[in-house]
Amino acid sequence: MSITELCHERRATLLPRWTELFFAAYPLSSPGFLRTQPDPFANPVGRIVREALPVLFDAVAGGDADPDAVNRALADLMRLRAVQDMPPSQAIGPIFLLKTLLREVVLPEVPRQGSGDAGHSGAAALLDEYLAAESRVDSLGLMALDLYAGDREQVFNLRVEEIKRSQSQLVRWATLRQDRADGITASPGDPSAAM
Image (cartoon, rainbow, N blue to C red):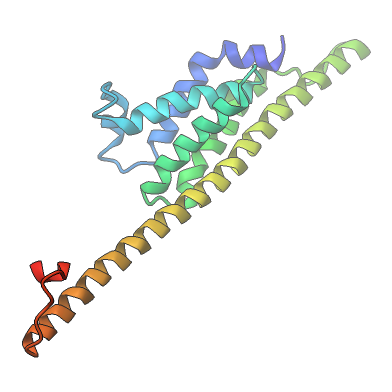
């Protein structure tokens, strides 16, 4: 049996546990809601996690995963975590926890040594295949870090723009008040005259 087949055979165990680890990154008051609320509109976080993780799991398992679908799933997950003001370790860390789960559930089924040369080479090939799956987890983690950093930068830029807009509004308002206090009236076509 290949590692891909073994991962798919253990998917019903691994995927729910990985999902729980993602939900555990949230405050204690919310994981129950995230786990139990089935309505995607009332629980968009739960929806995004539940839609993204199966795609990412299949990519790690070595199945025929569409690279665009994997990138979209990871981007959705990181965008969600970026707007939630999570530190990078908390946002990306649960991706790497899949390695822990694979080591607990899949690795014990990889034979350590075979009988004879043919068994040994088969065990070595299976171990190489398992290590390739762990490397795919690492690759997802690195991709997630890039996406998260880009999303956090975008959130920061949006906040800066919002502050600039609010400050310019305050400056216009203060100037108008000062002009009125000094006895200067706005021209009839000036939009600030309505303030």
